[in-house]
Image (cartoon, rainbow, N blue to C red):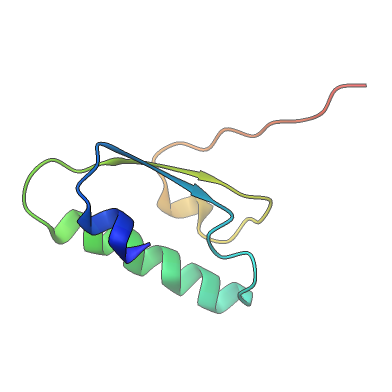
Length: 70
């Protein structure tokens, strides 16, 4: 994740980045990730996270929930 942030790409896609972490650690990692990005100079990337977990969702500007239809 750090390498992705430091790459300065315009869009970063995170696929289950905290899948194997306990909830408090998952939230801390996502908080650090988003805070680190905001502290770097220049344009900030759009960060898209695909996840099944609720931890850290409150840190994002927008959350899209997808449901399977029958």
